[in-house]
Image 1 (tube, rainbow, N blue to C red):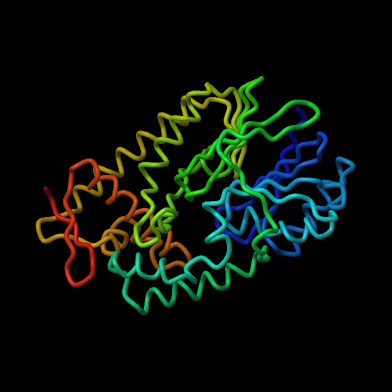
Image 2 (image 1 turned 90 degrees about the vertical axis):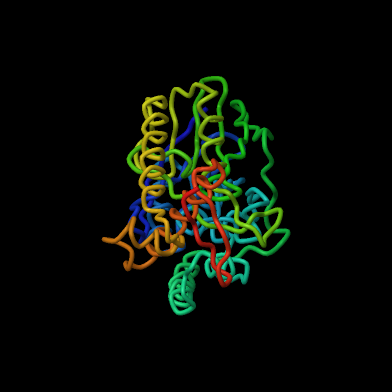
Length: 319
């Protein structure tokens, strides 16, 4: 199977995003990049290097619904005469307009985020949401766990790998144990477990870190020889990355538990302590709160800390 990695610029601190051209019939893109002129120009030029135009694309597969990965989906779809767009159904409820829904607001206020800070966060994400075009219901098809994406030269199996987002998906070419895994596995950074409402019960939080660890172990079970991530170079030693991730999560768990003092702490307060140097920089505040909530949820589920509601805000205490 001819898998071609294309590096596309983004306006985000994470840097370029990887788009994957599967140069087989039907010609497929896995992720597309953000809706910026620079990204669209780069994608056109890099596809042209391989003899491909937007109009040749027959299938657009999205690993998840973050703007740096899905932003150009509508533009490519429109120019390609209605290529199929596929994404997991747990992504579509929040596909566009993160923090625009009341569910997000309630989860953040419950974590101790002040109203004014939430308004600032939402304002930032309203700007970020401009980097994608909305797709209406019926304009995409669902990816489901273990479905096969068929090509003339073989197939890719869909693996639902929640964690970074509820509907994140990876893809495995079992013939040679090659993965395409979006932001589930990245060579040089640890993926952020983004705060999201639970797809089954939106009044509750999606338990992102616990789900992520299950997803990571599932990918490991395929003994991958090569893992293409959403950013940076491919991973050729999955075991090393797996153990590095587990160590990093364990170390952060220890630090989180140490910061939960007898007087208690909210997720917002914890985020300020964990990420003091970057907390007030743009979208980093939301990412910091997401990380803090994910680790508090995981520690509480493991019985290492307790939580109680105080005035509508979750307060975490030692057990």
